[in-house]
Image (cartoon, rainbow, N blue to C red; front, side, top):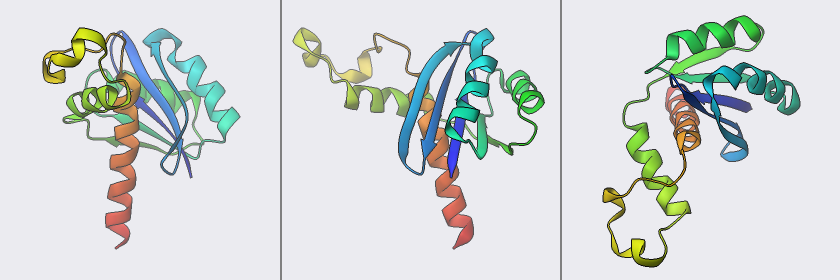
Length: 135
């Protein structure tokens, strides 16, 4: 099942399309450009489900997505702790170099937005919850 997830924010949103546990597309976009991106990706990747994080700006994003993609089911997913876990995963994928490798990553801030990593975590949480509900 192809899933599109949005980590909403006032200024920018992390967006990802995944097929099971494989990331097909990811981006961090300014919130005003979100609608254009998700409609494009929804048709390009054949998205069957949309997930939206339940925190900052989620109400507006849910309304926007629901009105644009009425035929695709939408689910809110708990975002608690995703920012911290997304930062850890970002540094796992992009380890610090040079003198920064001597500074604990817990004291560092990534050099670029990592909201797309939070969107990946939303998909993983959703899939985990679905597999637990099936058992």
